Length: 361
Ligand SMILES: Nc1ncnc2c1ncn2[C@@H]1O[C@H](COP(=O)(O)OP(=O)(O)OP(=O)(O)O)[C@@H](O)[C@H]1O
Image (cartoon, rainbow, N blue to C red; front, side):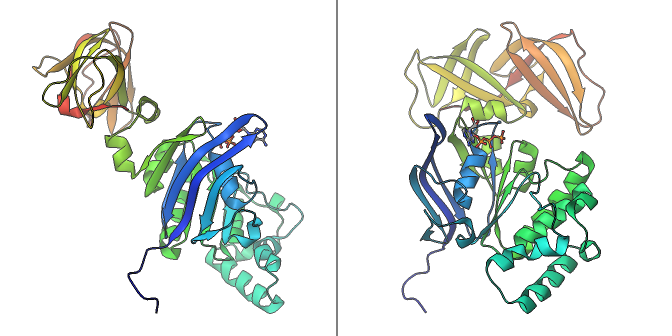
């Protein structure tokens, strides 16, 4: 037994990873820690560097700077098959001329395992993923959902420490996605393998991830549990990217008693300060979630006149989209199966409590 206190080992650590393509910086100083058995989602708009980050972890790209540690071991320079990882791609990247059984056993063949062991493990994994009846088929003879299972079985057979998934359900029909998501989450919890899941879909990231990493322009904007990102978006980008936030911009006034007045084109608002107060006159932004808004007559300290432009019905709630006097788009969500309070063209006032707004960095 090792002496001294046990230190929880990280499955993955990135320290200041940078990757350039020519003069273009695709990943700019990304640092990230993944604890054992964590489900991490890399979330961000197209081109922000999610896939490149994943490919650096996989060993398909070599970073120009920074360190990558898997299970505490520096893997820079190691080929993919020596990294204790497996990867699953959106298009599943199945080998077109190989039978399902052969594809699934491929990882073990690469590791030069004995034939008998490979045969036994392939049979077990095909049974576990309920694809034993497809063993002799080729990819062209499979449905999208079946291909997905084969790709997953192929990735999981080596029991990697980390599974890297690049938009793994992006190619599936919408109807199939939710069931596959639940299945993958259950598999991840059962096996204790860390998942790093790349997506541009925030619903996927928030429903699956224990830890969500929001990227923009090659950098991490914010990372943390989904609840933190939802309740405390750190920047205007994160607030704007996450659905349901109202983002307002203006100039800081003089802070008093932990509250910052912000002068905007639609009037003055009050926002709680976290940390140091911004200098008076500096440009600031803050956000308020759509479900925190109250509509109509009230004596709330923050009020904004707006005109309803559209009403969207999502079943569990109704989202009213409005436009302020200065043209800022605002959202107010009304929960429950209530008749709509507003229709397009209605003028009203929206209000919120100071403590329901979040100042951005
Ligand atoms: N091999 C390459 N050569 C040159 N530029 C590249 C290469 N691969 C990626 N890039 C560029 O690097 C940036 C990041 O790409 P990346 O694929 O990591 O983004 P992403 O966030 O995964 O986007 P998406 O969701 O669209 O896949 C993009 O601007 C892309 O055009």
